[in-house]
Length: 264
Image 1: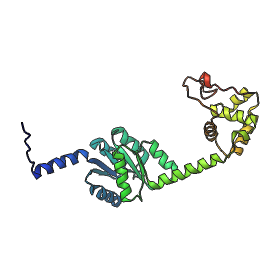
Image 2: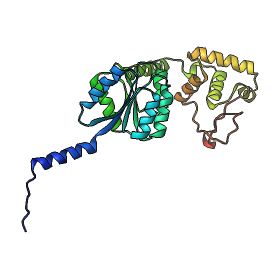
Image 3: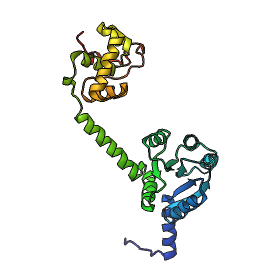
Image 4: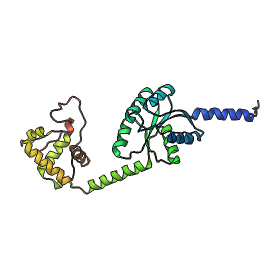
């Protein structure tokens, strides 16, 4: 039996095409306090056939209301909003609409702001001087389930990372430290506090503090977190947290095969 081909009219093909396009279209909400900037974003996004701007807001309350009512696929959310805390608004948006992916737009470039936004749940961080091509890239990255950082932010973070790596490669190695300093560095990284280190090594807390100060000076590090990270990078410790551990002693538990033996 032969196969019969039925030609489809152009109107049918057009309807089918529109249906496929509708199935792929991303529903977008824009929340920005500056009217002119918000209208510009709307015009840019509306020019794209796969993006549908379904709502606009000017402050954090409207952001939450629109997220709850519309459940958009994407939201462009300004970090600075009238009568609102941008980060709190972000958290609330994600609470009422967990499926919405949020691109934060901000003028702040500092690592603290970027980190705070990402920790609050943002899926992307873009600067307000972003180009139209970068904006489209950001929106489509989020739509594809990926994350986005404004190129200027990504470049700054990469430069900082490379600088830290260079500093670590050129800093003092453990062999440059005295035996006692290496003992104390290891114990610090394992989570011991000053009194615990003193008891473990049979030295006074004041002596521990003096050795810790010498460590920081030699390694050009200025916090316990930095010393701990350094010791881990150098392979001096390997641990996993145990919630049942006594927090007043070492802050980390070692499995028996990794339990370090440090000479007194």
